[in-house]
Length: 239
Ligand SMILES: Nc1nc2c(ncn2[C@@H]2O[C@H](COP(=O)(O)OP(=O)(O)OP(=O)(O)O)[C@@H](O)[C@H]2O)c(=O)[nH]1
Ligand SMILES: [Mg+2]
Image (tube, helix red, strand yellow):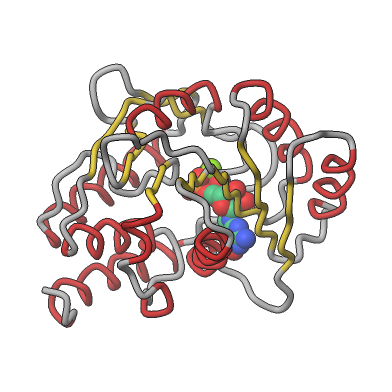
């Protein structure tokens, strides 16, 4: 069966300079997709940019502006709930900062026909990163090693946010019970879905480090992420 109702969700915080470029590239690459932006009340005009863009395109673009909350994890949850409620078959997540190239989307759509989750991986053959600072390479490498070691997960790029999810696997998860709210959310998602027997595959992506806008990853977030994985390993009832 062809999975044909597709939603791309894009969490944003101050991505005014990037978001329209990304949406334009997406629309030029794949047809019959809808877009949902989850913006945490950016102060650089991201939401206004999205609304203005949505008026000049035929593609269905929706935006949820969350006030008084911040966090990548709960932004994803908001997006997944929207996707399930509106009967999408496939939900794709992408970063707004042009790190995730829409040219890869057709490969995601192919693979999601056969798998529950498709993860865009920088660390398999034909995958890679462009322009990465050494600190980010090290951090990403360490985060992956740590996640694999602590949780025993397979896969090579457990923190990649470029993914496609089939609706049925998302339906098995109680999204409100996901406790991570930073980058460890992505690892927790794989951990929980794996426990439910998800068929997960990786496809290669070339990740381009952001050139516009600011990074949102903080030291505090890194420590919290590591702690979250340990909590999942030792205190989760899901084991
Ligand atoms: N809604 C929402 N989106 C967020 C939040 N934090 C980050 N994002 C978005 O999530 C995506 C990934 O965040 P990035 O800052 O690019 O994180 P990263 O790729 O690990 O780090 P850099 O590329 O180095 O900046 C981007 O689209 C951000 O705008 C947040 O608190 N709320
Ligand atoms: Mg980024």
